[in-house]
Length: 152
Image 1 (cartoon, rainbow, N blue to C red):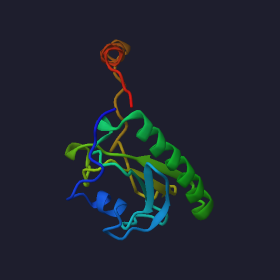
Image 2 (image 1 turned 180 degrees about the horizontal axis):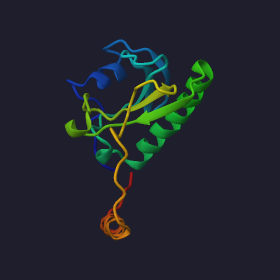
Image 3 (image 1 turned 45 degrees about the vertical axis):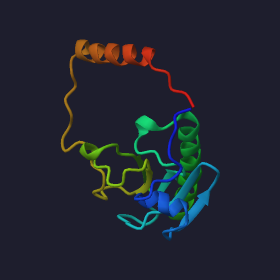
Image 4 (image 1 turned 90 degrees about the vertical axis):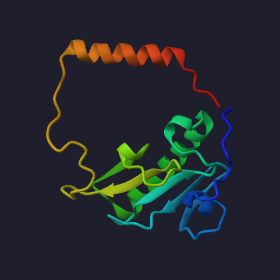
């Protein structure tokens, strides 16, 4: 199992987990905490965080990752009933280039409505590379994946 500090002193989410900073907690279990995000681009915007400090998905162990997704599914279903959105986005960013603002893994649950103007991933239709380029990418990822072991 990869070692992670239970809490990091300068981390906002660790402070919330420790009860040192107020949080509007929706639900929690041994491994995760779900809370209403204080920043609300839409009503019902929530976050799910692991209770152990882990900065990005790259350091997330399988057990904690599974627990995060189980909590996400539970909260997403509650958000759907509570706010009746037309859709729902889940997003998670890793590193500054991806827009990660707090260096503690967190997954957003965001209710969505048609033309709400939020989370436009592509500013225009993305290109579709030739099949040979996609096959090359597939080979690169598969060769690395075969050498990796993701464990607890």
